[in-house]
Length: 373
Image (cartoon, rainbow, N blue to C red):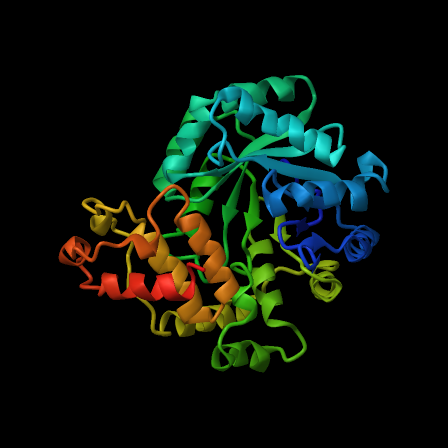
């Protein structure tokens, strides 16, 4: 049975990590990347209202929209109702701003951005669901869905309440497949239960799976010395059923060329390759990390309102993958709307509530020193 996006080539160009020159996007290199991407038959571009403070949407206008016929590509962007607006008018104006900045005329795929936790309520407070449905009726949105970071049961509830959503965007990669906090597999299974096709974000876990420890990367190199470590992660995601596109946040032309080398003539993982990935998954599980299970017991009495499990997860990105940039990015989102690690009062209630007996205060101190900057 055919599904929405079935015929879209499965590599999507994520526009969150575009090449930079200082504080500005490198437009000329971005144009080269866009040209090569389209030349090789790929068509899906993904940005968001807030990427690079709006510079991403402006850049894709210059590099793509102004240079190619509108029917030769699909453009997606997103509305983050939780990110600052104080009124419904301000939140809804994000849509019009994105339309103006991209010059796209309409959006092929439009998303309510980053639903989950306390962020979801903003979309109800500002009537974003109804507002975007109206824009879809007007033809300004071809397909409407949402991106999501939360637990599978929360996703199930959202899709029960909003069956008109046509697709979902989920964080899926082999490292998070059985994660207690991300729940990649469980969320994917919920989406498929509701017959929603999936756009995959973070297939390389913010770059972490391209820089795994050498001892673990060697497992991949032994299996196939001619392919990049990152290619295993992207192909794992692209091998799932019901996928619209797998987004890769490519930062330079070399990354683009590597992705195109194995996705242009994409072949799903073989059984032997799945065994290799399973071996890597086990090796990553054995790397020392903070053993947080995201039970949330530590947060219930925190006087500083610190999102402790999310901060510990961000710190694990650094401890396990040595990915400082990714850890800081995760920390930024982990502390949005809540206390930072440095605001800890060291009252100790969190440690008294933790069933894993984690030295939370010491880890919060480390997070403040390493990734709060």
